[in-house]
Length: 272
Image 1 (cartoon, rainbow, N blue to C red):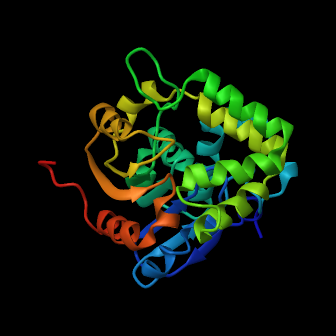
Image 2 (image 1 turned 120 degrees about the vertical axis):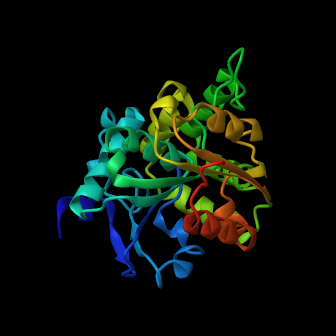
């Protein structure tokens, strides 16, 4: 087993001519794609991996400096694509990984046929002319709560982000994967995500981008999807789904999976 494969728990399923790479978001791992994968393996080669710092990865491999910016995650993604000789993949990324894919595509656009983003945001904190959804003090309060009692924070954060009560299967599963992260690593990743500003990168993303968004997402206002659409450097298209929460592929698969499959199969038309 190679270093990249071991570090990221890389799994390859299916054997189609086209390759789909699935990147998960904060607090989850590759199991978040369990509703989507069965619909892909008969037609595509599917690559799954865990972001460094997620529960199933070895915490000793987590470099706090490397992962203080999204470039660290982007370099990891490029290393995986190089290791498995992937070119012109369809990259499906959720939240953190959607922006990781965008940055990686700036470095190596030849590796990407297109990017499908779910619940993506280039910046979570509001400015005078941009609505990211949070004020700086909101983030500081969340970080303080994480530091004081991580398990309690997970229990409160999960239903807010997923949308739904604590008894729902999706909330329980997200709580489990969130709590499986080492607390100091979770805090570091959380700070990186919620304090980055990637708006200046967007014009340099030239591969086609499909932007998928819940109509009600506590973490990402609908206006952010339109902001991405207006500022990306290549072709893009937006679809707002009638779903609630930041993890619709996880919490509302009956709505989200058909939408994702459609965007995976069909490219953006020139007049889009």
